[in-house]
Length: 105
Length: 114
Image (cartoon, rainbow over all chains, first blue to last red; front, side):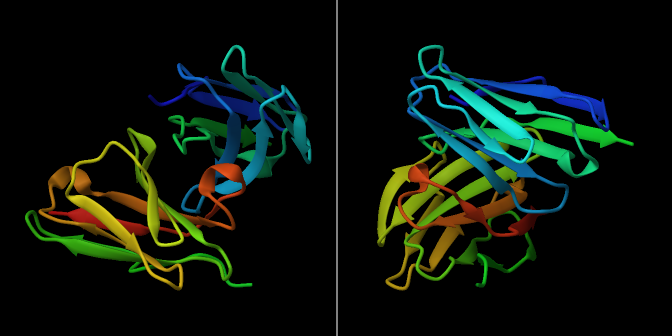
């Protein structure tokens, strides 16, 4: 059961904010976030462990609500380099279908 | 340090053939996991090996198999290829078991089945 990510695609102007959501039908013990640029390998952003902690990476942060089995990725003041497809992954290495983010100048 | 290396990068096979893909993890990493990536399905987990033992397996038919050697290098094999097996196959390595920390992905092996 793949986590469901929403939205499927986002288009932003530089400097705008975005939120990507990841929802699982099964219990989550941790959530991983990765970004994949076109033609490149996915790159690790962060891992969130049970406990609702929030982590950050540059201007990208995330939250994890294990009771709701959801995680959200927050991209603040987006930059051109943020463009790519974002995947959430569960502790069972099951990844969501991805959210394509495009940032334009 | 060197990253995850996958070979071959590109290959073309015909239906019914078999293929073997190789993955060399980052030095010192003991876990290797494999994924199939297609435009419609995203990243699909195939299996994970840790210290030569298969720890987890995704929902793929038995035609997909893998193994890990004592030096942590891993291979995956797909037998009796089908058109639907055309995909980018990614492997990832991690220091500990894959679900506990950062995965380092290789650039993938792009398989086309004709």
